[in-house]
Amino acid sequence: MSLESYMNQIGQQARAASRLLAKASTEHKNNALLAMADALEKARPRLIEENAKDIQNGKKKGLDAALLDRLLLSDARIDGMIEGLKQVAGLPDPIGEITDMLYRPSGIQLGKMRVPLGVIGIIYESRPNVTIDAASLCLKSGNATILRGGSEAFYSNQAIAEAVTAGLNAVGLPESAVQVLNTTDRDAVGRLIAMPEYVDVIVPRGGKGLIERISKDARVPVIKHLDGNCHVYIDDEADLDKAFKIALNAKTRRYGVCNAMESLLIHQAVAQQILPKLVSAFHEKGVELVGCDATRSIVAGSAASDIAIGVATQEDWFTEYLAPKLSIKMLSDMEEAIEHINHYGSHHSDAIISQNYSKTRAFMTQVDSSSVMVNASTAFADGFEYGLGAEIGISTDKIHARGPVGLIGLTSQKYIVLGDGHTRDN
Image 1 (spheres, rainbow, N blue to C red):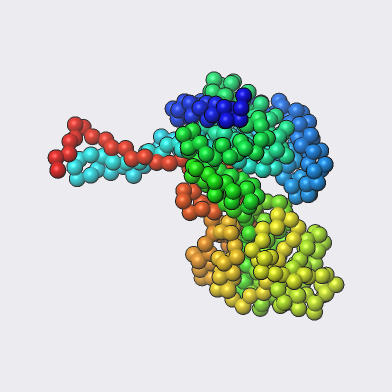
Image 2: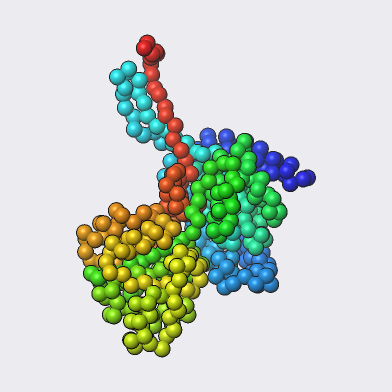
């Protein structure tokens, strides 16, 4: 079968499955999710075995440590996938919810009903657990999905797909409700994003280059974020013990994730107190540091003077490193921090550490990001932490969804009109 024929078949099957899912009961969908969880547990040895093939291939291709970490399927991550399925099964089903009911002067009753988007195409790299996150959220929200994982995770994704199919079969839902493409042909992506007759929305998850390409070439709507250039600002009225813990966590919890801090902003009034301590802690963790002239001067005259701080360039302030590297800048006030974040940031997740209520309110209001934290790590920008069970991605768009995209973000609304023989005369 040619690639064109294969993709058309996938699209037709997804469209047909979406109509069946749209009318599936909450119980039916939940049972499918729980059956998938059971199937994953039974397939655990196979998942680890197939993932080992991807890890081995990745090492041969020279993937760096951060990418290999994203690719790894450990027992703990399989546990997380299983727990994610169970959590999504326990979430309220948004489909069919009717809100905003009111009577119009004409006598009709008007409201809105929440409905699925239809067919969602998801293109992602590295992380095989995205296969389960996407499958669970799309299924619960009544959407069929077509998944195209990266070639580096091919064996892992195919093994997960088998468990997903087993779960669907166990409860009598169509296998085509969740389809994982079985080809690594790059042209499959080009076809997937150009099938408006079969696909209603595309969600790309991956590097900036991939997402820019998808956004440029897609013929269907795209829910996206280009990168996660996240900031933590330590104010002159911060609790410095809290600031130390938060900054260290935001950067070093995991490096290859989109909610990791990439730039640390510090008010100059507290820099002498906290910067040397943070520099030493980051150095111990193996984080490469670059900074502005003021940052380098303060460190040079401190107890951390033996630690090298590179010169931060304009490019550094714009960069999502996804690696153990951090840029640091001294600022004169919060307004300068807000201006820096809105100019250089990617509108993903940014935090302020301050005990001043008025400042934190201003920061929340004025920082134009999908998540804004107060006295908390940017690492919390995550669908699981937000109680969404899982996420399809983190959108930095303003339409149609923003922030972690869970069930509600995968739905739309339509107007419903209730009458009793009403006709319009004028």
